[in-house]
Amino acid sequence: MGIINLWEGVKSKIQISSQNIPKHVAIIVDGCEEFAEKNKKPLKETYQTEFLNIKNAIKVGVKLHIPIMTFFSRSKKPSDEEIDQLIEFFNLLLKWELIHENQIKISVLGKWYNLPDRLIEPIKKIISDTKEYDKHFINFCIQYDGQEEIVNACKLIAHQLKLDKITPEGINAALIKENIYASYFMPPNLMIVSGKKKTTGGLLLWDAPNTKIYFSDVLWPDFGKEDFLKGIVFYQSN
Image 1 (cartoon, rainbow, N blue to C red):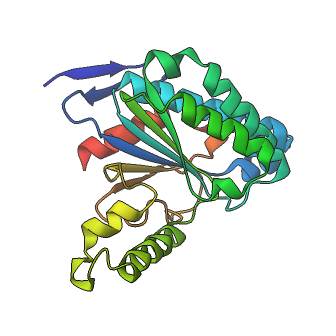
Image 2 (spheres, rainbow, N blue to C red; image 1 turned 180 degrees about the horizontal axis):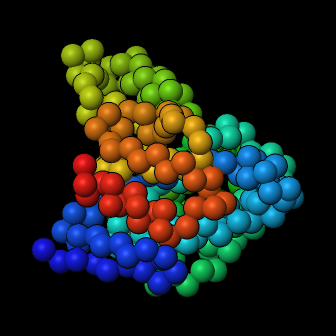
């Protein structure tokens, strides 16, 4: 069994088996507002740290050869300040060499098309420019709700029924999977929850019944490589 010894920037020695790396890691990004209040930091600066830590997590995922990663913020609707930071983030991702060198396809799950045009355009751009990549897959859940995802799938199936494309007997779990936002991704093996809340917020609700969940208890702006790796250790130990 191969052992991966990690890591630059990690205080304690962490050993990870190279034979049992999760194929899909979902991460809940939480605690930014709490961090800003606790440390008397401007929200803009905190959001910048939030997105920097997402980039750092992507680097770790690529290093560990994790093919799929999904990021989810609990906020159902981004504030104007968050929207501005998302615009800057997607523009930076598009210029980031790591995305292109590692053939990372970017997808956005949720009702992001209802967002202001100034954010829709960079989202469309990065989706379009990475659509042919197929080595790694990064998903961002924006204006995403797990229950709503399933409801929308049911509506699509009802429409197919109405058009006589399927019969009621043809409705099964596989058909629902085909109609959710994450239809073309395998379910997450591991979900890492940052922040103090001990819930998953409905992330990938249909796909997550067998997902291992690691509650890190660390606010996302404080979340570093070591915290990510502890999640992998948890996965390999349970």
